[in-house]
Length: 148
Image (cartoon, rainbow, N blue to C red):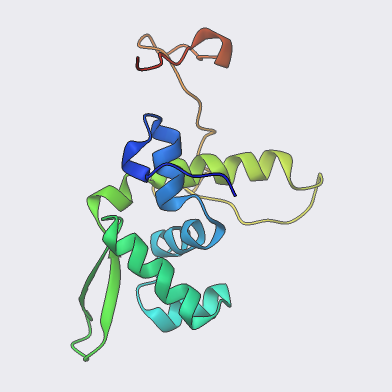
């Protein structure tokens, strides 16, 4: 099996990001946290995953600073998982993945959930990279500068 570099030895931001949130379960936990889930049991019911796998992913997300544990907001002895500022900054990533899925993974007319702007009650506009002047930035107008 090939050796995989330690996450902090990766010079690529995409590789480091994938090391933290790149597996299915971690991304779905983050998605559910944005939807307001906070308790272990709620995540488990939503995702239908094994308790040990959920526990492992939650631990890793807490360790990475994406989630934090805090006493339950209702005063019970439970702990809740809440998004940190680092976790909340993943919102554009989750929205972009959602919009890509809506565009490419559903048949015309097939029902799916839609992300709505609470203020306008309209679907969130498609996210697209733009340049400093607000113009659409296609992939061929960018380059990755490798660290030497």
